[in-house]
Length: 114
Image (cartoon, rainbow, N blue to C red; front, side):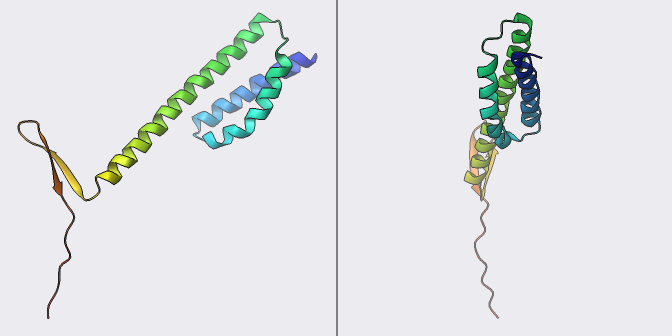
């Protein structure tokens, strides 16, 4: 099997592994795949098989879309956490006219006397 075929097959496997990591939410594990991915891409850069290149391109685009969706999800989660932290101790309600009002829910300390 020629080197370019081996590299193509390895890159297809790597892209599938990358997809699995993205779907599993293990985004921090993606960094360790990058050097191998770059090396394989360099190796197959001379590949002239349009069908094989099309499959690789489709797999890479699929992963790119998954990563974009994951990034959107992470940003949404961070924004929600910030929102929750900012509202700690308050309750937000909507009035009959549609206006929003915040009500403090933080209780003062109660002093007991004997």
